[in-house]
Length: 201
Image (cartoon, rainbow, N blue to C red; front, side, top):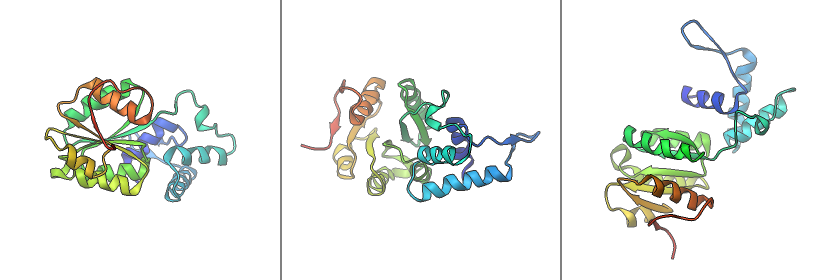
């Protein structure tokens, strides 16, 4: 299980918090290992990470329901797949400022793993990720989950992106308001504020 995933779960759900060694390494008790196995088993059966942790809280006597934790609000997770760490950081900043939880993946493989672990409702995909694997990534997401996809690129690839299953295409450099409003529009959170190419009639 990737360390980044476990760290995200610790921060977001606060149910399995290990002790730390003097060197900062995580030290799990046997019962905590069993808790992580339970979460992984739930996700293998199709549950999202959030649902798996809710089930864990309900299973463990005295565990507070995840939805009731004041420090773990139920926020939509956006998967951000971009090979440029600076561009990813820029996009992440504005999406988090709007209240979204963001998972950043800098390669096609990492994006696939994050998608399988987090089941995000929406993914933003840079078409040039991993040497131009973005179109395949769009197809993979659409074939393996109920997810909305925003394709982005410095190249005018609107038709290719929509043919690959993307729900919208944005040309880089991205305008922050355009990115946020596109995401909100697709998720049904607000009216769209700028021009975007979307699939459909």
